[in-house]
Length: 457
Image (cartoon, rainbow, N blue to C red; front, side, top):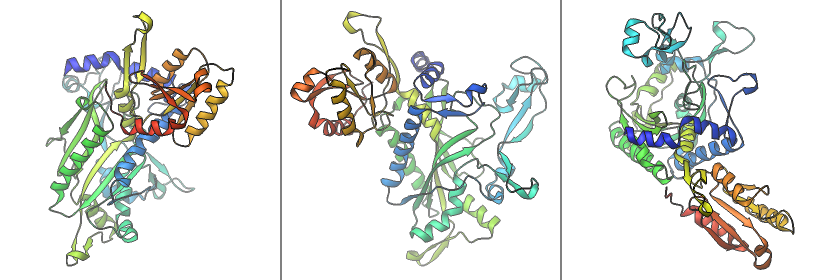
């Protein structure tokens, strides 16, 4: 596994990913002109398109392709009692230490045991403070007065918004168990340490689905959702040897969980959590019943009006982590040796066409002789179905390289032959193969290529 990681890092180090992300407009440091805001990032033109497509693929998978799952967009600001019921006020903490010498702040559980035991800073050797609990929730005030009655939190997860709306959705949409509620939304955690680019940040987005099942069927559904989530990544063409399962041991298992697995991805910094699948039992709805005084039991009208609090199978993925994974997984450096030049390399992002920020770029061979005008006409026609780009600057080979680096799966080149016979050159990003295609058949051909796409490298 070390050899696999070393080989991977040789191509897709975090430094290379970060550099490409800024250079091509995927991700920028937040407030960069003021020195940057730690733990926060801005998504540029290509980055927001990639993020929306990753979220869209997940949303389609959950809601469009499953008749028993509906969507929700709950508020970021929720009643403070929500977080007392969920256990976040009491338990959502990290162990914190400070170095008295260099003033660095560290998570105690990330410090080597020998340093922690000796209370010695791993950075400068100075003395560490005693470990204390640090709650990760951001606090703010609502209303004109800042006192204890105005205290409110920025939500640290999206799941609780689903639980408090569970009864509303049953009643308004006539849902019957088993059923699920899906949500994509912002969450905020006051992380002690933010690092590895967009992997761990203070402001991020989650893609969560909570599936409500009858007690006694939870283990069956837990295994079923493990299967479905693994198959999802496989269908989108990710490198499956860079994905693995990790089961939570006794010391890792959350207080609410009966069983939990993570899907881990081999990032440039090693194996890290990408998504969690959890059997949360009836803990959440039971706690909200207790704290709200509302009856959250499900009444099974087709089962003799049996009443019970459902068990919950959760699939929880970080959208921003999925974006980082998609960038890392797609990144490649390839020696192309055009015209015998062995020093000719290209950087290419091998995105699945369903995720690529730009689906097809239209490139006139020359700006003159009506080629640019014909290319613009073709782009206008393609815009109805695909995300497009137009580039007429520089040599055609250099323009191909720019599109490769942006992850564009297809390029259409308009040349003088296009004016004569109504055909264009269709170039495939992965193979660099070029084919002549009639302009009239271009849209259908691209739809076919996308539907049948299989990653080869």
